Amino acid sequence: MTNMIATSKNKIVEVLAYAREVSIRHGHTRRYAKHLVALAIKQIMHLTDRELAEFLSKSEIGRLLNYKQHFDFTIFSKVRKESAQIIKELFEILVYQKMKGKQARLFAIDSTDIPAFSLKDKDARCGHRTPSKKEQNLIKNKEKTLFYGYKLHAITDADTELPIAVTVAPANRHDKKFFHFLYNKVKQLFRIGPFDNVKLLADAAYDATDIYQELHYDNVKPVIAINGRGFYKSSTPKDPEYGKRWAIERVFSRLKEVFGLSKNRLVGIDKVAVHIYSCLIAYLIKYL
Image (cartoon, rainbow, N blue to C red; front, top):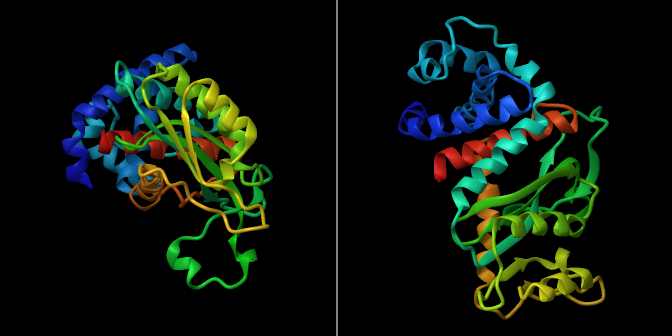
């Protein structure tokens, strides 16, 4: 992991520059920005706050970020309490810079579960999640697919596997409720023309009339699984590009397995959001 951080030095410098812009816009000093970058490094290296402080006190990356030796690691806890909006904006700026001047044609939308750290988390709710294929072979009782926590809702560029529009919500909110918000984010990033052959790839959770109407209005082809709604088995589209929907599943898998997305140790939706956006920024640093 240390070698990966070293090879990502230029990307970290780039992220730091944008973090400074966002921090100043929110009334903080330029020095505040280093803490936002540090939270992403924490997810890349799978460190505790104390371990992160020790690493930054002794490493070249720490000197690059202008950390002093033996600083108080509790600063990261303080930053999480106030930086939900700041780190969200930082992620959105990074995505905009990555996609500026580019054209995407295939978009995949879905959500993934983020378990709450504690049942005392008052912002979390009970919701359903889709078990992995391995879990499906073991689970007999469907109630075991219930979990308490949050969901990360996202639209990904299916070709580059870049998450381009995201939001965080309690787990009881249905996936389709976030389509319009996320789709509008996509339209802010890209021009969608009538001859671009743009497609939206989605599972049966997004099989809804209002979604079809908005996509047709924008000349976007909906490639969405048909929801049987309990009367018959849901069916997948015949479109040969529907298989690229799995791009978003790979993004979620990397976020969980490589960057610790599912290892949430925080309580409250704002702090959980900081954890999620830290994972997303770590993803951008490593893969893009």
